[in-house]
Length: 291
Ligand code: NAP
Image (cartoon, rainbow, N blue to C red; front, side, top):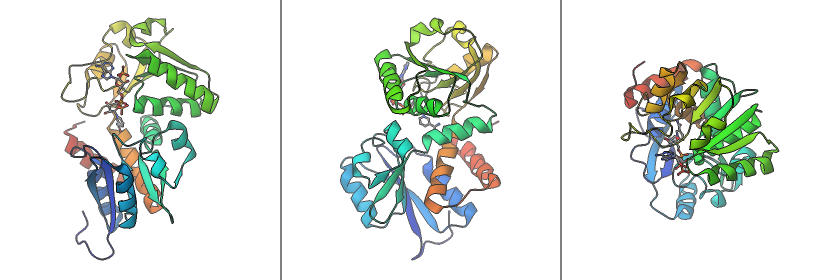
């Protein structure tokens, strides 16, 4: 945290409902302190009326904001402009102030990409299974299309949602190798060695015993698992994957990098690797992660 708030302090924040558990203030206030930037980042609980919240923030001179659940799509009509990739996904998590209003970006998806790269995991040319078809899975599926994955199996409890994402990806990107399936149809996926992205809420604290799939046969298809959940540190899904010999990672680095990318957009800087590493240490401590 900066040592003194004064007349030059810039205000940033996150809008959502609820925002009491957000880790974004930790990320951005630590980044600002490390980078010597005179800014503060606070949670803005927006119960309703996203339109007035955005207009009010702009009028008050707020320089940048993150957007979280439930407003990632609802915010779009209230923006001055939108980055083309965020527009394709239909979700915005970062607002950058421009002369006449905010421009919307999506840093969740490149955040996931950087997190994967930092573990030595590539998407291009890889065979991928995405579990889930909510907002995060959708962004991950578009990422796989843009990075030209070899093929993407999209498994969801409600298979119609996976079908809708497949149709949209074909329409918007021209990428046709998305195969929607119900969770119970995983045995239609041929072979093994897949990168598995776990993007459901099943297993999220406090429901740590839940998992979208538990059959060992499924985990035998996995080479590497990346679970977007970061509390707990090891989900049941990750444990089952490890039991079948797969590598498994939690999603804290995705959270870290979506924050770093937002900070870079707001401040037009590149955050050095040693600063990113320091912020990650603070985040791990806050989340009770030891490794
Ligand atoms: P969402 O839009 O609400 O989607 C939830 C997904 O979870 C849907 O596919 C839903 O299936 C599925 N699901 C929920 N309970 C399930 C259960 N018991 N069994 C099987 N499937 C179940 O949520 P989201 O925003 O995409 O978030 C998904 C996950 O990603 C969350 O755990 C979130 O914490 C994590 N996430 C992490 C980061 C990060 O930075 N690391 C960022 C964003 C999200 P149905 O469609 O059938 O309901």
